[in-house]
Image (cartoon, rainbow, N blue to C red; front, top):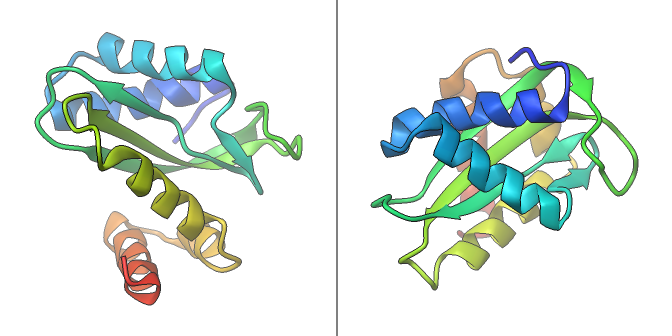
Amino acid sequence: MQADRKRAALSGMAARLSQKVGRSHGAVLASFLRRERLGPTAVGNGIAIPHARLDGIAAPAAVLATLKRPVPFGAPDDDSVDLLLALVWPTADTKGFVPALLGVLRQLRSAELPELLRQSRTAVEAHAWIQTFEERVGR
């Protein structure tokens, strides 16, 4: 994905997620921006996990993207971000969000998975790597 700054990266992720969950691009982007005001969702090592809870969606949804060029994201290690996994979760589901977010964080903090995702050439390939790592941790 092409993005020249953090907001553009969030907007691109929101556009993809809005199609998946049936909410407007603006609603998804606004939820990401509200969350980012609480603190950056960059976790280090060039990775960010933008996430938000949304009213009016039936199920969680996620999208993964690599950026053509890394962008500053406010990461704790000051590294720019080039790998994003964005997640939206129904506000009505009060139990699954935090465990899911922690599971994503645990997988993306592994030594191998982020590099494998960065090297993936197709969505199918990236999804296969994620499934492999989910099976390893017994998710």
